[in-house]
Length: 98
Image (cartoon, rainbow, N blue to C red; front, top):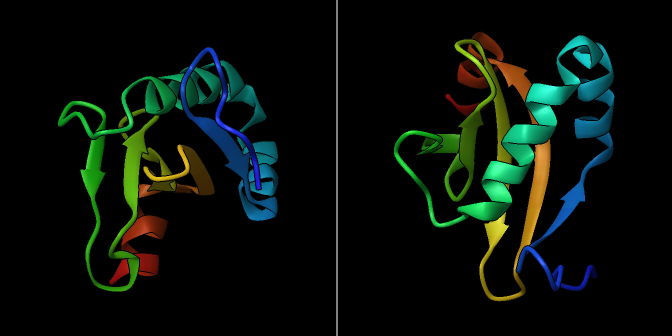
């Protein structure tokens, strides 16, 4: 298990699917990385960045990279780890979680 980052307080664990998804959006990598830092910097959920999910994705949050692109993640507040699961567009997110 990853240890909490001593500077940021939370560590990030990137799933294989997430890494593969990022490859498809490599032209937006700076925005993706900035959103990851926003997630780690404010994991408690800010209405401007995060939104809770329901149904199949209960317990997960998503963060907006832009109008259409979302990072699906699950925070572990006890161990201070953010698990980045998928990078999906809005329609893919709806299909996965409904």
